[in-house]
Image 1 (cartoon, rainbow, N blue to C red):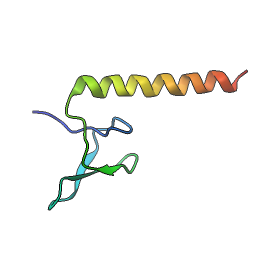
Image 2 (spheres, rainbow, N blue to C red; image 1 turned 180 degrees about the vertical axis):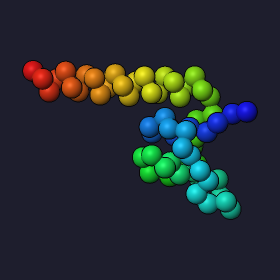
Image 3 (cartoon, rainbow, N blue to C red; image 1 turned 135 degrees about the vertical axis):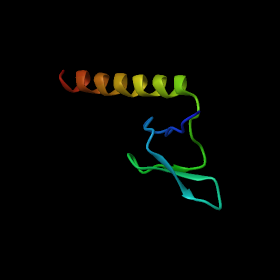
Length: 63
């Protein structure tokens, strides 16, 4: 069984926003769109990328 994940934040809290059209809505970040991630590997890579981005921003602020 595949799960749908948000392409913006990687959250699995996706629900169908409009049943008549394939629009999804993320409960975590508010993303609304027809694009969702179905592959768990891509979702994991997206989350790791976001963590690295946050870490690099924190390191730059400390200088």
